[in-house]
Image (cartoon, rainbow, N blue to C red; front, side, top):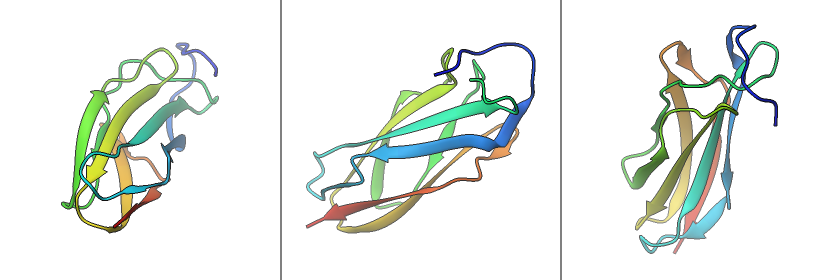
Length: 107
């Protein structure tokens, strides 16, 4: 993964998030890890950006690392006691990351 550098500006279009795994049990214990990469217009990680994760109220989101590291990475974990498919999205001070991710919690 590219390291953060000064040149370039934060790009909401280049930034992305993904979840692993995409499916978990809705037992309130199984966790899905959501990784959010905040990248520059050159595809490099942007360090020290505060990231917020948004989801449906049925999900319990825990911040693992809310501020991006040298790779532009912030981490969250989500659990649910309610089955269903849920969309997740992220924001930084500059706006909303354009990509979203959908996770599923099965009964």
